[in-house]
Length: 199
Image (cartoon, rainbow, N blue to C red; front, side, top):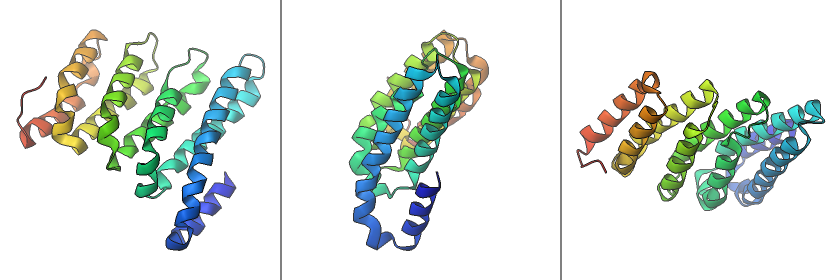
């Protein structure tokens, strides 16, 4: 996406001057992500090549989201989080969508730097757990979800504690104990820093 690459290159050099303009750019990027994702799902069965191109556009647009200033992301997080969760959701159509799903989860994880992320934590955890509970979920997607839980737990610390047992139950329910070592290590950090009761 050369235009966006150029835009962010210019923004790096002239942040103060372009701040208000980048505020206007972000909603357009979000619109692009939503439109290209939906269109890819609509045409995949009959126009797979076109759908693949749309998936690539979606991934690239998502990739650029964390490059926005934290303040801009914070002010739009109420739009960004639901959009990324929709994009992460397994659509059951094809493995062609899996890289897009993973990119959405990676970017969702990166949003934890935002000061308002805590307000969306319940939504993030519950939606990702629903994804874990779905049948035939790609192994790479599962690993990305658990990796995100680990990193969010360490970042948010005691704010994450109420969700620990919920995630542990989901891991056992889906027989993912072989993937749980990293999560168990992460929650040791959480409970060590703030040894409060887990809900």
